[in-house]
Length: 241
Image (cartoon, rainbow, N blue to C red):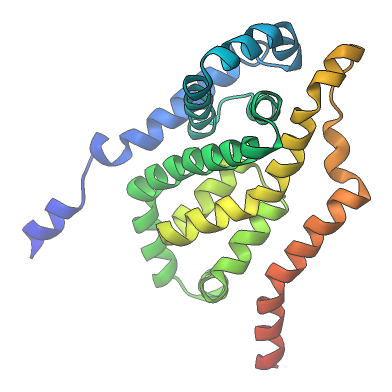
């Protein structure tokens, strides 16, 4: 029995290497790329990007998605610029699918690395714990889908943290992918829409208004979706009372 357990539980670098690599690259990226990725870079290279897209559409789409996956998977700076670029190069559709799909794949990479390295152990400790920790874990476990949707729809925590928490809570891969893709889709739609109109913004020499996501006609529907996601939790609480 002991031998089987040892075989199934990788140790050392095989277990912690992926998440440690992500952490190292994330720190290096924050230091080296912080001032090199921004709206100005996109504005300066817009004509070359459009020309390459027109000459090599499928290659440019694949290259863009791969770059976006890397940005998210290693928590590199520039995710917002990448989303704008997706809309600028590929329009609202299929740009929103490229953006949301790539972000989901990248986030899944972090999730799997964290779950492989720490998730099972932390989840077991939470299950064995008592008191408030156990109550919190049981509450989330009963309504995992709702909590995960809310965490994505209303990003009150950094995206990187939102990728780690489900891993530590031992959420299934299928549920994580589903809630991540559909949870970030509304926000991706808004920023892709802004990116699709960058041509006019560039022509006026202006910068895009990323604060549009907080406009009432945009934020209202997103909060409505969050309320729907929270409804099962509220109903469950009311039934218990």
